[in-house]
Length: 134
Image (cartoon, rainbow, N blue to C red; front, side):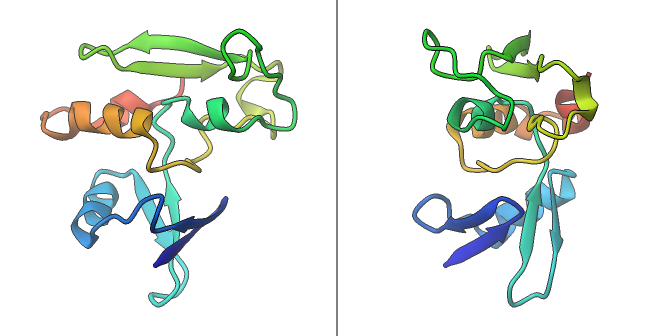
């Protein structure tokens, strides 16, 4: 099984969510689906885990040799459970077309993203506050 996303195809070896998990993401405004039912395209909302920016540089990103991720990726906040939220400090701000953070998620199976979501999965607060871009 593979699933299409805006950024490419996710193979089941990477992540094979159940229908219930996908529905939970949709119910919590973390996933929208477009396309036909037989070949859906999943659009995952960014939760500011920084996973994308650590794995792949955007066209203007610069790899920091010390950390291994983009030098424009900066810690923005620490949640009560110790999970980190990140911002992109790329010159040009949120309107820069190269900027990845805040534009969806190309690694919905990443451990960092899952940790952020799991930290709030059982809480009564909505995830919207957690993922709002400053």
